[in-house]
Image (cartoon, rainbow, N blue to C red):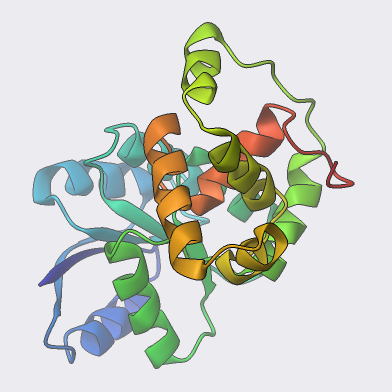
Length: 222
């Protein structure tokens, strides 16, 4: 069973989500929160697999709540952001804070349900085209040189893994990376897994953030 926590300040929205999710045999709603602070508290108390997080809420918004929830590290619940606007500036902040991806509130029920299953399985929910738009947003801040610990982790990457990280940072999909490096898709998947493990990153979206934040890629993809 995939345990889901709902966080939204609209009662009707939460009720509708609960009704929809509980029609699925592999999903169970373990709690509801009307603001970000309550969401963070319930996430610690109920240990959900996925938190379905509204971005704009009273008391504490979804960005701050996401940061609090993901601070627990590798064992933290996965946060899936629900937003009204695809390019909402808060979405970018939530991705930086550790969210595994986002969905539009107007998404069809099957997309939402599949999205929950996707992030519960450890994958990120951002397509390559969205990732490329995120790059432009992240470009607004200057890169930060790797600290000694980050530099040590980078040094653990093989030459091929470093190449894969750079291509991830440019928003390429596994298929595109495979074509660029002339290797198989299964090999790319293995390299991506190793890159994430060695750098201590949650998923490929945060590999993009990492590469951009540390100046490994630039807005022009160099």
